Image 1 (cartoon, rainbow, N blue to C red):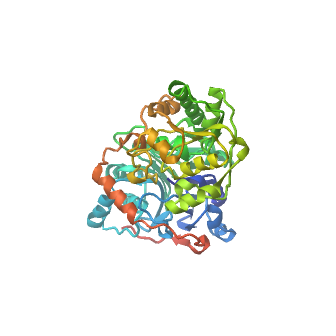
Image 2: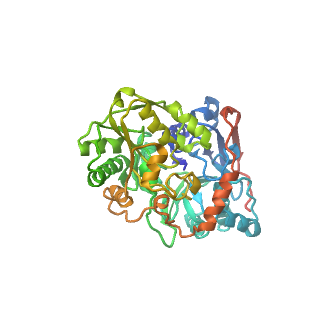
Image 3: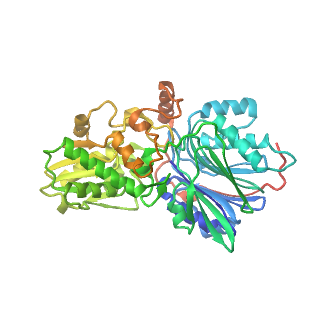
Length: 512
């Protein structure tokens, strides 16, 4: 899971991109990058670490131009935490193209082989985003005539990308001297929104993974980029759009609403905040129906993304809601951390219980989900150490029993707590008196009730049904093997020592 941003403005966009990436920081903390376009010259700076660590004043000054793209990186299955895989990526032909991508391709190896044999392109990293860039660049090159690029050529290239590429992808790219290209996979798995702002009578455009980046940057949310759609905005501000896939459906990832997205975002017409309130309501109904004899004194959320669900659950059940854990905001999200030992060590650094809220009480802890169970087990033990009589654990999401192959880092079945275990065994594993999971149909209803046009969801980690239709047991075995070979970035590395700062002048590039 990553965050992407693209802007075509009337004034320098470096500060807009920096601020926007900070608003998307929750989507990736491994690396950050910005590329701006000044005429036919790209200016790039990227590095490992948080946005605030990667960019300094001198870097911002070098990022000149009125258009640009940005990316915050979250490493996915089998990928190393490496500067070489920080985005955006760049190729010099045709014209010069930079690209940033959120999602995960499911036919990367096939594409690599095809490009080597037929497209005569070399891939330098293990990143599927570099593969996607080269597929796009090859298709653009095959449609260029007389060193000009028309909207029809851009749309034709994206149509070819949709035919060749499988998986989940939301993309922002820039073509030197021409404009910004934005497109979304035919299933609309990964989110992508667009907004506008008027400056001196001229319209500026911004595209982002979440609407919060638009809101806080002064842009008005226009709509979501549709599944299979390509939007092309020239550097002069002319916008063109077209659905470029033969078969499309809107099937957003349910985990966005459960965990990843900020509550103040609106994705595919759904307020993330309201969806989480609805999840709490649905969970309360299940507790009334299936656990009528459970005695609960207080409802306590696991900060931060479960707060809305816990609050609504408590209100629906007529129970006190209390903040029982204080979060250290300077510790990274444990779900994103690459090593189990690092993840376990960080839990107690990240959360500290308020003993007063636990002592002598039967406590219902509410979290957004239970994935590996490491964090949940530590939290339950904290509650018991603080004097809780009984500890019940509720999840706003269903049991995560299957790998996700569309950009979320939970690919190994052996790592998933719920795989091969029933609810009683899961409760025993994390030390809780009982575990209460949301039902999948209830979770879907919690989201769908806000936007009735949503009829299909990407929910493979709960259901085992992969919406792209190309995932089998052999594929899952392969990504688990690749994950086992992946190496995490060593602790203590200085992000400032891992930076790339480039001016890419492509004015004189010849076409391939």
